[in-house]
Length: 83
Image (cartoon, rainbow, N blue to C red; front, side, top):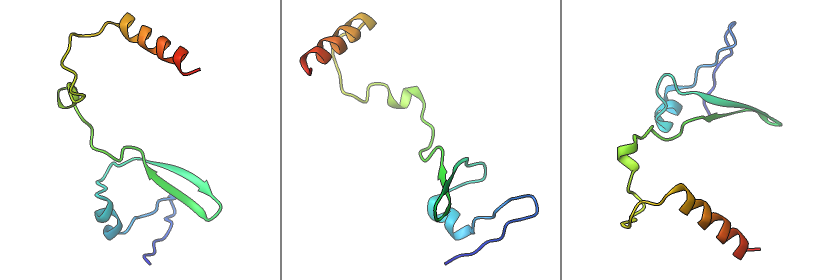
C-alpha cells in the first residue's frame, strides 16, 4: 500500500507508480466524490480526445446522407413500435 500526505494547501501527491499505472499525465482532471470509506477520485477524461476525422464513418454506413427529419422520423416510429 502506498501512502501520501495532505499539504498545508490541501494538495495530495499521487505516488508515481499509481500515476504511471493509470497513464495519468500532469493536468488530468478528477471528479472528487465523498464516500463512506473516504474520498474517491475519478478521471474526467479517461480516454484521449479524438478528432472528427478519426471517428466519422466508423459505423460502416454506406448509403446516402440522412436528414434531420429522416432521423427524427426513425426515432418516433421506433418509439411507437416499442410501447
